[in-house]
Amino acid sequence: MFKVASWNLNSVRSRLTHVTTWLKAREPDVLLLQELKGTEFPSGAFESLGYESVAVTQKAYNGVAILSRHPMKTIAKTLVGDDSDSHARFLEVISKGIRIVNIYLPNGNPVGSDKFAYKLAWMDRLKRQMILWLKDSVPTLVGGDFNVIPEDIDCHKPSSWMHDALFQPEPRSRYRALLELGYTDAFRSLHPNEVGQFTFWDYFRQAFQHNRGIRIDHFLLSPTLADRLEGCEIDKGPRAQEKPSDHTPIIVTLSDLP
DNA sequence: ATGTCGCCTCATAGGCGA
Image 1 (cartoon, rainbow, N blue to C red):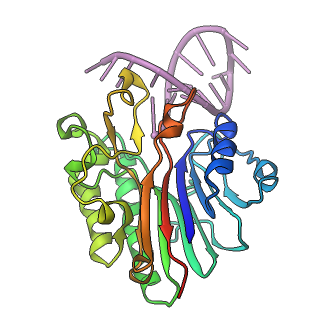
Image 2: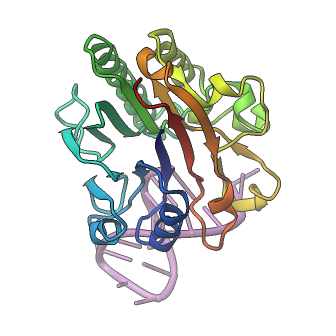
């Protein structure tokens, strides 16, 4: 079994004890982190738990990292297609023969702004890469915070997200296009029609207590990896703790090669 | 419009991003 988890921490500094405690309890093989929110990355804390790490950081915003209990090779730290894009949102490694890609896709609010255009362009660039990845023999997992609510079922109430960038037709059709390439949404493929399954809840108005959330953290699996899909689980535990991130971890379980 | 976080600074309050 090979377990890969993903968690948007909303500051690794503020959530260090949350993530180390969770790693000890759940022991995933790989953990993808997003929204580190700072240049410093506490690799020592993870190394002492048996995880090597690689991080892409910037001041104050964004930031992604991959932790692994197995040797990993860094392939890329930027998403190709725009040399002027300096955001820390992309990290590609190979571990255990799997291409593991960690993304923090742009939020894109407000709708119609430059940030919205950046989001759509970023998704177009991602799609081009995901096409290329299907053409080689390395099974591929693209995971992280996609900042896209794929379907109406993925939010508690569509009308309250109608004006949000995460719910607009343009990013949603681009997300569906990734599935049409042949990638599998790990969670939804195993839990079709299951309502109320979310990975993010706003901090305000007790959104978590009322389960008013959205499903925006995803794992997309290439066909050969989808054949190995055993399970996909959202762990709501960390979101219920004191001083939580607004996201909670999602874990995908893959069978070993025969 | 608002709610609540976390980061940063022309810093101890306000702006930005989410």
